[in-house]
Image 1 (cartoon, rainbow over the protein chains, first blue to last red):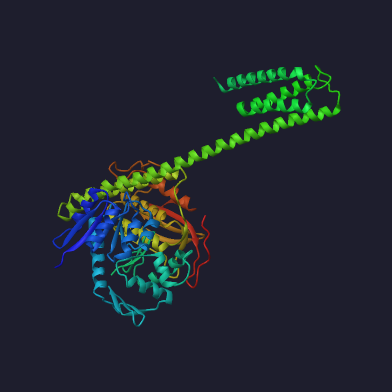
Image 2: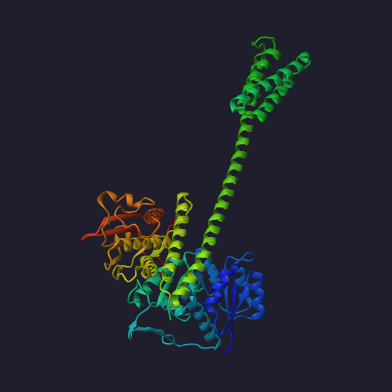
Amino acid sequence: MATRTILVVDDEPQIRRVVRNAVADGETRVIEAETGAEAVDLAAAARPDLIVLDLGLPDMAGAEVCRTVRSWSGAPILVLSARHSDAEKALLLDQGADDYVTKPFSTVEFQARVRALLRRAAQVGAGERETRIVAGDLEIDLLAHAVTIGGAEVHLTPIEWQLLRTLATNPGRTLTHRQLFAAAWPGRAFGDAQHYLRVHMTHLRRKIEPEPARPRHVVTELGVGYRFVP
Amino acid sequence: MSGRGRALRDLALWLLALAAVTAAILPFRARLDKAHVAMVLLLVTLGASAAAGRAVGMAVACVSFLAFNWFFLPPYHTFAVADPLDWLVLVTFLVTSAVAAQLLHLARQQERLAAHAEALREADRLKDALLASVSHDLRTPLTTIKARANELRVYGDEGAEVIEQEADRLNRMVADLLDLSLLNEGALRVAPELNAVDELVELAVQRVEGALGGRPLRVRLAPDGGLLFGCFDLAHSVRIVVNLAENAHKYAPAGTPVEIAAGRRGPWVEVIVADQGPGLAPGDEERAFEPFRRAAGAPPDVGGSGLGLAIARRLAEAQGGRLEYRPRPGGGSVFALSLPALDATADGFPPSVTTS
């Protein structure tokens, strides 16, 4: 099995150690960077399969590192943030980051996020395109535009369909309000979009979730967007 | 030297200056025009205003006015004035002095205000930077502690679970303390907007479920057809409901459920958290919402910082809502969070939301 490379960028050595302990195994090699500039250089030289990027870097804003790396690399970027600035997180996701984790984080959750990102990257790399998505008793037929739960058909409005389709074709990935709005209302200015989005998302989830308070399929990421659980 | 003492000293100095100037031009009285005299005396008055303030300037203006009349307007050495037009000159002189003194005073005040505003802005910037860095700095050791404890637990050390939970508790306390200080300064950013009550309940349940240690959590959302929307700040409201649920968990006897329910009550959406604990004693109902307050009969090892209800109420009010207690029928507590309701339709776009 080929060795995977994960690049960790954080100016605090303890955090780098925590991440290294969480992801290093027989098949994974971890390389470290302390500054944004170092990160960009290492990303270019080592071509990592995943980048874990801390936002509190001394020399460059996290968004800038994201943008720079994203311009020539498709490697998934997982952002670590200490401050609960949801606007900042949404911005990072819009700038090319794939997911984020807030410090302090649980190692188990962190490992799950890393695995999901690597798996998705591998799928994309293999050029797989699904026509049917199954998650629990939810089945989505992308060709027939049909959704069934436990075999029973669920009727969705065109906008609800667009939202579900966008989320389900990016399983495990947090999509920002902006990204979802662009998918459901292409060409419209974002403006007060969150409001419209929330109303439609609420209706959609009431249709597909047996227990809306404990959603199985679409989870809310506070202040950032929504995520489809595969 | 006190302010008053200094003003008197300045007044004496400037009157002396006035006397000196008057004495200097007195010999040339016959050849000087009234305008010349007026200009010279005005200069002295302006000097007094600029150097010693408005009060001294006005005083010097009055004395100049008298000196002008006495020494330079015929008949000399009397306060009588021969030419009626001279009254015009005198009055104009006084008014000009007064206006100039006032203008100088205003200009100085503006300068002081601008400097003060700049100082305030600087203090604000420092405070924001401090809060941000404290928040960041405290979270790094917490991350390490939590991660290591998590690893220990995964490798079979059951005792490490407590370490991880306490790290989480510390994290919440840090957030609470920061928020309380921001609330006290009126500086906490609260951004109410259209939000779904479903999401509020979902996020609260997500954050609380793991901490209940097996205690049943009953959740009731408004039945279908009654989708609830309100104008509130989602993040803050989630914190409130989580606070209430954690409290309920602390005070409810083992095995009894904690209940979260949402419904509509007139112009409000109401999210309640109920428990079957002892409830609040009749006199305690308002005092429970004060900071650092703990119920009289609470066991001493009940965790938490005592900030919960105080912060929760302030956060509710900051969003235009309310947080109230009522006894649970059948025993226990009901804490009700009320937030302004909004009616939103799914077809097309909902009515525009005004955010304050």
